[in-house]
Length: 88
Image (cartoon, rainbow, N blue to C red; front, side):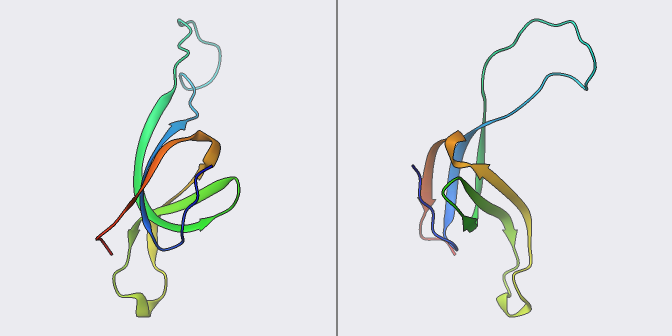
């Protein structure tokens, strides 16, 4: 299982949950394949089951933890993850 450290930056490839269409009954071919997403961000929290990363963080930390673009990813959906080093 993947482990993450708060404040570190990660590149994560993960399988997303998805659905076809906009709801209601539809006629379509069954598409049974995963959709993989790539996300990069600062780890702001983690548990045994999930990791939360944020893509945008205010540089001036004296104003508080102002951020945008939070996403929580199920660790079971993560296929690969790397810590990005030499960046702040």
